[in-house]
Image 1: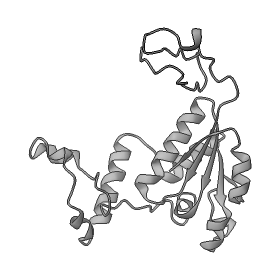
Image 2 (image 1 turned 60 degrees about the vertical axis):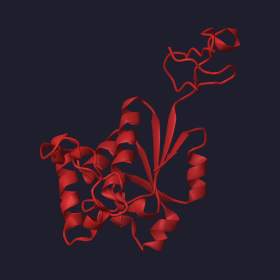
Image 3 (image 1 turned 90 degrees about the vertical axis):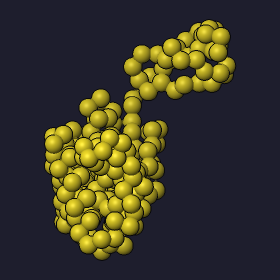
Length: 204
């Protein structure tokens, strides 16, 4: 069991109580730390519209809903492309600015190459964004991960609450008919702050 310094509290997020131990291996504070006993609630703020940035929020939301967590997702700025039916089936993945871009297939050419980052200048070559996007979509499909529109259908069916940011919605001159049917409302940031009160909040 891992040990933590005296006085350090590890929050519990449901399930069994977390036993906090001191560096000496004895329970901190003379007993077990009480686990969080209230309803579990997660707020996800999705702010990016790239394909590789869309999936983390969708996957986390789906996983949380599967664990019985109350999930609220707020799509703002370019993240609004995820729930925009005119764009969400055509999100892109680019190598530019992505220093973590590497390809597992290169390991077949020479062991170790699969861990090397691709040169950023390659991303400027014509057709590279389309190729990288196609490659990522194939990798996701091979793992039987749904595409973005289907993923939104699954989230809506699981009871995940999805909202569009009003500022971004107005800035992009969208209409409500553009939104995925699972989006419950177009709300302000202040509205989402109220909705997400007491939630664990993640910004993506």
